[in-house]
Image 1: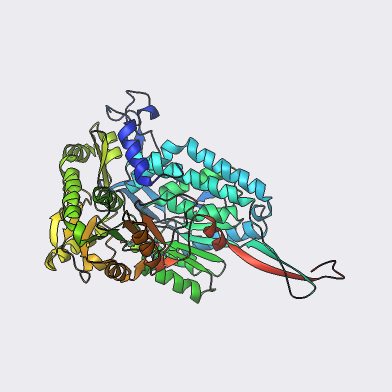
Image 2 (image 1 turned 60 degrees about the vertical axis):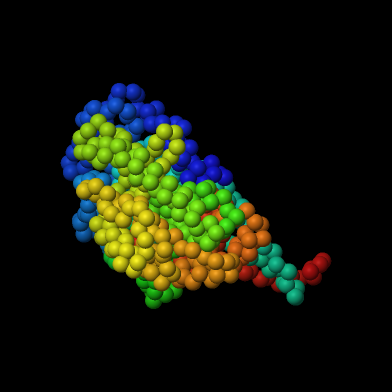
Length: 573
Ligand code: NAI
Ligand code: MG
């Protein structure tokens, strides 16, 4: 999987393998029942034609502090909802400042006195590998939980994201015993070395769009380098982190090393960001919140903060590009999942513009037309119909809908996590229309339930329109025309963001010019969304500070200590 894109994996998994019927014996039936306020998928409540989702319970709804599941100190809980229906999945303990204090104290003790930083790196490596093995073993339950809580299509969670999660931990397990400093030549008779030390207690705050992967990007390097962690999940998606963290303890992670706090941003999140005993903070989310946590970090103990924030990534289609392929990828990149790096600005060379329009129309029309039956099935299935399984596999209100048709994958992204974001997306769409952009497809709510938004494409978009400037975080694509390379470079860079860019051209010189001129953390050339564990990811400008994944992420969790000792009668210097 290492060298493949998310899209490739997803397209392949959906088109080639059919339903995950292997997960349950044929004929076994799934449904939703309620037990003590907590729903679980059970194997008898509804008749299922094609069982594809394993039974999954919600085993953990408490906070995980010092290796134990505990209630919030306040006793409060909040609801996590099924995004397709708005129905309750579970009441989850609502962590607050006091719980963050408890978790940080546990992490502090585990760092200062516990075995984790003192284990030989090889032993840490073995535990991380075991974590990955256990995640593999429970792939289907984890994927089902993620699907339920986040609204991802089951296929995507089961065949792409959970395997990527395990891959990431194996990658960082590989680094655990390869972290070392340097021997440095000095001008005088000194032995000088650098020690790469764990930084201490890491605070981590993650968003809802890829709950498991964001966990992996942060927890993987922090554990490999011997740190301890307090991680706050997104309030929309608290469940999968609790599940995998429990598995990590089964794998041998000592108590207090990984603490999980569910709760809200301004309370639990802010308490973590401003905690005096947190040595480092890593955050992914909106630019707006990124500024807040950076300030909280500075005003408390000046902890170093890495930020992975918003984007408004340009996708540049040059006149010599394979336009059909470029458009298909741009289309997928935007509509497969709500992602910070999605290509919402398609900048098409004047010479390629007509073809870009017609290809875009082809893909979006396909998307809207072909899967309609499946969509309706999925929507009406949500409550009790046997097609619940199909719904699980095919629908997602929180971020998108994924549908498959006649062997080739078609994707339809819908709104997202909650009514607030849903309204925000529709408002942007209205502003596009009001400003005179041409609405090519979509533009409306899909269905009457949940928060679906049709995949929406605007042409004749101008740089100063809000839809071209702001991060919408919804399925809205803008097509803009450019004349020449200099112009497209300037316009691509004329944004406060700098997360990623796509470049489509057959000309190596054009590609090289763009690669170096674009002020972004990632350039994908004639491809997109390659998110291997080893490839660093992060932003320029207001898209963030620092890099996650790859070797670069290790330095987020390490201090460099210079050690100088005098040399007596050295044989050489
Ligand atoms: P957000 O930035 O508000 O939330 C992300 C995380 O930060 C969550 O865990 C949240 O609880 C926490 N948080 C919120 N306020 C906080 C505070 N004052 N102190 C500490 N932690 C805090 O993002 P949200 O509300 O989920 O989405 C809002 C917008 O953010 C989206 O519309 C999108 O534009 C952007 N976004 C970007 C993401 C990315 O991958 N770059 C991911 C999620 C959202
Ligand atoms: Mg928010």
